[in-house]
Image (cartoon, rainbow, N blue to C red; front, side, top):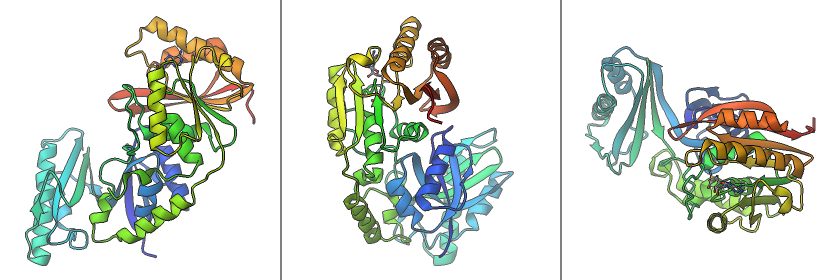
Length: 387
Ligand SMILES: C[S@@+](CC[C@H](N)C(=O)[O-])C[C@H]1O[C@@H](n2cnc3c(N)ncnc32)[C@H](O)[C@@H]1O
């Protein structure tokens, strides 16, 4: 079977989690190579169907067209001009170049976009005698040019808008977590459907909804219908993709799982229920209004996996945050004999001090970019570990 080279973008700091997920979905013999907010790997063309349908931590999947070093804009032109675009863009289709640049250069990202755009037009004209149309608003084909220091990457976007925009969110919490970050935290917690998953400060329900989708084996890409960039590309077969999607949905798991979402505000819980209903997992999650600092008042069962995105302190004063983190960790230690806890916060010092004061073991800290914010994901053990 013919192998293709790909790269995928993901959350910066969680490349390893995304790499493990991609390896598992595609059954790759080895882990993808880790880059800066992206991973690189080889696979069959069907990887485009499988990853766009199943990946929970990936943002966009690109067919790798070129990867190399450069010194000047002329090198970038030569690299892009040397490629054949006739098998990915039909003569009647329009295209756009999206450029991103990081590092010190004597040119801008707009210069990169126009240089690569000209190279694509010149290459196509030389092979087919057709001048391709550029459409920056609604192109049929989107090519990404990434320049970072002296590295130049060119990729064909197979996804379209980022996969973290799942399409089921009908209620948006003011501090909503990205679905891809929630999924990565769930993987880190080891949640596999056995035991009790709890998000005690769930807001609009992103974590419980993603946790339920995972264990029910519902493909996250099934909510955007046929809104994928690859469906416009000559290389792919929309019928094959639709068949895979239908088959995946028919095989989703209808067993009973224990997933609990809690928040102290009724309005957020109502919003979370709407999101869960829209994702088709409202029958898998028990939502309740409650206080995360008094868990034993609300829970009949001991949580085994707690994944949570507490307030960071952007709106809350430091003293209140300190009190909340300590009281929550103390309450959790009382509510369970043993559980894996995964927390995301940008108040890393406050969280570490609270964990130490309460006797919760921090096993690992991962620094990530959540939007424009640097945040830490803490992987912790509450009570005795299960070995
Ligand atoms: C950062 S938001 C969570 C956002 C959520 N992950 C989402 O994607 O929609 C933090 C949530 O913690 C809730 N919260 C704060 N203190 C709480 C407490 N003591 N008990 C329960 N919920 C609390 C807030 O109401 C807020 O909805």
